[in-house]
Image: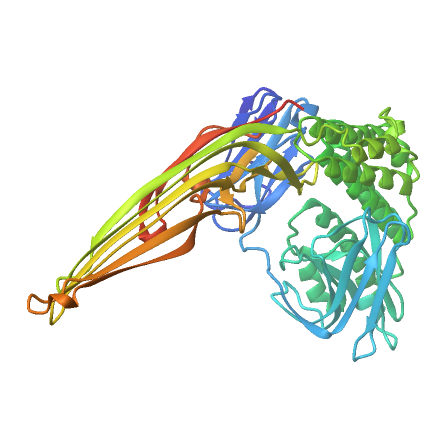
Length: 616
């Protein structure tokens, strides 16, 4: 046993360890939260458990070993005094990956809205009717969903005799509550042999899920999208399903509830009376999940909007699931100080992100509207006013008047120059040579700024900035040629030259992407059809020397023509640039290289830029 601060590590196994498994602490962060490392692991599934008394153990984490190791940070460790940890083997085989085959003809599509909810249904060829419904206030924004019949599944850890299963999309979608899947059979079914199940969109995480079963129907609460169904199980197969490893805590709780119902139905099949304590067992398990897996993070969520949103979704889903199972619900959390503190912090995080220029005014308003809508749908009133932030109308007016500090101006300049020449000879059968030289230079200050914001605060911040420059560019082109060829009587000589120079406006765009405070892409290029047009004049003189015996055949004539050449700077990307400063508010650097222009003239080019964003 090793003691480090208030953390004690142990190797007392709940199951036999594989290999030379060890558990250790990799690091304590500034808040003294330990990072636990399980090492020396064979392929399989392992868990990290914690205890305060070495008798009662709680599973903190479970997952697959990667490169013989699992790393887990216990963020809630500081809430305890002495804490013991151990690692356990959960399974020596990877979790099953299910592959579903779907019927493209059995499909329903619909829209779920915050104020009305929605529903969709279809009936398969066997007469089984599937209906999915969602009540109001279970989504924040309208979402398009699909429900499709699953005809076959491979990779199941345990196989039902028959099944009725559907696949939902968008995969992984999380409700702010729960929807209800109703499966209605055309005839009565052996309801005591029915158990419901679910698994993730990637085919992992198979688990039993709680349900309500009647003589010819099954009702299944759905808190997040995956594949969901009900099956008729032989007792031995249902036992396998009950013992199937479940990958995450939430599904493990649903698995436990499904197992409680399954055990009661199996006992009734053997002649026992219905267990009148089933309701109490489900109530106890859901409250245990709430107290042990959600509530310990309430205080941390006051300063972490991402965590607050996750916990809110979990709590609402849990309460809605209890209601659909006939257990009743408790909405007291929505009026609690924790809920209000989370909401106010999420507002402040979004406003601060705007003030720091990390999101646009559009994203700020979208975020505040989402918080406001959720607050009103849940009966919590005006969110901004409750948190002392004014009211939504003021923010909308300021956004319309461009009075929000979310898009600060950029200033700075770019410079460019290139130039080169090429000379070559034609062949050995006649004398010829040619040369071409071109040059281009420009410099400009920032003209306009646009930002496309795809942030989703507080989880993800991403802005694509487009800075437009309109430089007065100067360019030139010079080409010369000489051609001499002997003919039967005399010599044919042709000389030509082309010249042109011009100054005029171009349009250059500097585009760069900032994700979560880091510049991940940077491009300088000319916009389409905005190259510099250089008018050229060409003169060609053709001379025939004639023969000595026929000098009167000598002649000479000149032709001229007009044309144009279009010059543009070399486009460069982030992998060609040497940055001397690279932050979301300041960008400096150069780009140098070679490129081929008119007549394959190989020219060295050089970009230089210095860009600054004014303080928000």
